[in-house]
Each structure stands twice: as structure tokens, then as C-alpha cells.
Length: 448
Image 1: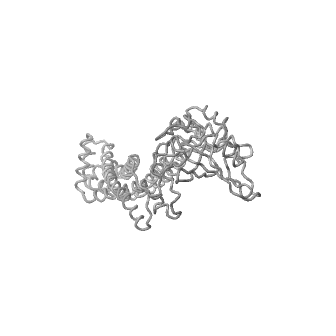
Image 2: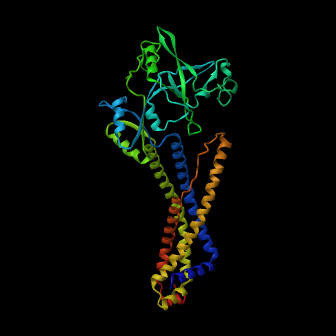
């Protein structure tokens, strides 16, 4: 018997018992849909978390925190360490910054603000991706570059202290600085406690460049980059490394800080694939590092375990549905006893008879899996729309737009369909074997 004839035979027999077959397919579809929807929660949350991480951090960026010493302490990164980092294969750039250990007040005309201030090595910064939206890089000691959002932080000194910002926390339009910054002189005031009194020093600088707008909408760049000469001038006034303000109490010891060390060091790899190799090199040389790739691996491992557990729980629903398939196939063998007897009488191979019943059970499983997949997609869409609305209505919390509660990738569909087919075929295996062992004469007399 050809496969086409076997398939036609299966369809004819299924049409004779439409209600029973329909209920069996329905049970299979519900089980498959339950499996997919349950596991889709794990896939959805994983995608949301990974996407959020990728938006917040550069995937090729590796942060270096120090080098582990013999006693478990960590030393700061210096120029010799930077030279080693740059010698590692597939390293694109090594940025290093020294942070001013106080927030100076910047004043331009009647407007002022405070901002985080750094000394940066611009050739490495440009290699790492730093771009300017206006102006140029500093060429003189008193020239500085400011962040794209620095101008937004400037506010009028004539504004009432309690009326500067609106309800959103932004500076009101009437108090904003609305002129261009490039080419303007700006005063930087730093302070220090001397003999219990606060003294200040003002350094006049010139803004020559503005960094490019951050690619992420939520990001704000208000950083100020000064020269090493300006940093030394500040240290000469404060008498402390990085312009650190002395504590008011002499009993409090100031933390030790190497003036030649860097506060922030970042390695940028040529591509994502090279990150693991660079991290391995750093680990071998006892450097403490962090990369979003390492964190993603840990998150993916946790979610893989969680998704496997959810798929296992969903499979239980299919196993329950398999009881119905077993009953349906057992009844099919009983009702088709005369047909089985005739096929055996004319010399049909037992394997052909077995294949016919396995084909019928797998056909039921396939139809149920397809229907269940469609239903699962519809439920997934409804979940992603309804749950955020319910949470926002009930708790008044606004969820991130990128948050996805349910996601159904193709891999999950293939896994669910595969499990469904395996379960349905196994359910029809025993009835199919029973059909092959049936006595011809008893089968033709409907005596089983």
C-alpha cells in the first residue's frame, strides 16, 4: 500500500468519528498551547532583560577595577597596565580617566551649574567612539570639552531657589541658558577647607567642543573634560590628590590615592566575539573586570534552567492529553477490526498496518500542535497588551515600554510541536502493535 493510500485511509476513518477525533485534537491543542504560553513567559522576560542591558551598556566594553595583590587587595591601574591592555589581541581602544574628587561650580555669565569633571586621554576616547557634535578637541591647557546635555543643566543665578525646576524636574524655560557654548569662557570654582574655613579658587576655561548626543534617549551627558594641567592646578590649591576636599574633623583619615593612577579604565574590543578572549587574558593576570557579556551569560544560564522547567511543566499537560489519544486509537483499532482482518488476509505487511495507526495518531498530534500554536500566539499578544494595562490600572506603576511578558520564538514552536508529535506517536504505539497482532479470523468476525 502506497503512502498516499495509507494517508487517504486514515482520513476516511477519522471522518467517520468526527466528534471523538475533534475532542482528542482539542485536548492536544490545549496542552500544546499551555506548553507554549507557559514557556513564552521565560523567553519574554529574558528578551526584555537582555535588551535592556544592551541598551544601557556597550557590548564590547570591559570595565577594569584594579589588579589583585597577594593579600586580596586591589591596586589601581597605571600606565604600565594600560600598555599591557593595549598589547592584547583584538583590543580596539583603552580609555583612561582621572576623576576630580569634588563637583566644582561652573559659571558662565549669570548662569551656573555643577558637573562631574574628568581628565581624559582623547586619542583613546576617539578610538572608543567619542564624537563631537560641535567644536573641536582641546589644544591648549585651558580648553575644555563639555557633554551634550551640559547646557541643559545651566540655570540663572537670579532664579528663586525653590522655583528653578518644573514638575518633571527640568529647569524652567525662563531660567535656561539659550546661547551657544562653543567659544565661550566659563569659570570653574573649586573649594577646600583650610583651618576650618571654606576657601575657593576660580579658574577661567574656554569651551571648545561639545560631545555628540547620546544614542540612548534616557542618557544624559553633562560631563566636563579638563586638561591634566588644570587638574594639577586644582591639586596645588587643595593640597590633596584629585582636588579632594579635606574632612572637617582631623581625626578622619583621607583615603590614599596614587596621583599617577587612573580612576576609570575601560577596554573596548574590536567585536563581540573577542570579548571572551580578552576577559580570559585579564583573569589570567589577576585583573578585576566586568563586561555585560559575562553578565548576559549568567542571565542566559538562569533563564535556560527556568525555561526548561516551564517546558517540563507544560509537557505534563500534553501527557494528560495523551490519555485521550490512547483511548481514541484503542477504539479505532477495535472498530476497524474487520478492515485489519481483510488487510492481513490479502497479505498486508504488519509494518504497514502499524504505520497506518501511527500515522493517524501523529496526524492528530500535528493538527493539535498547529491549532495550539495559533492559539498560543493569540494568547501571547493578549498577555502583552492586558498585563501592563492591568498593572498600571491597579498599582499606578508605569512599566517600561520594552518590557515583554510573553515571547514565542520559532525555536519554542519547534520544541513544542516536536514534543507534541513524540507524545502522540508514543500514545498510539501500543494500539498500533495491538492491531498487528490481531488474529485474522477473529478480526473479521469482530471478535477481539
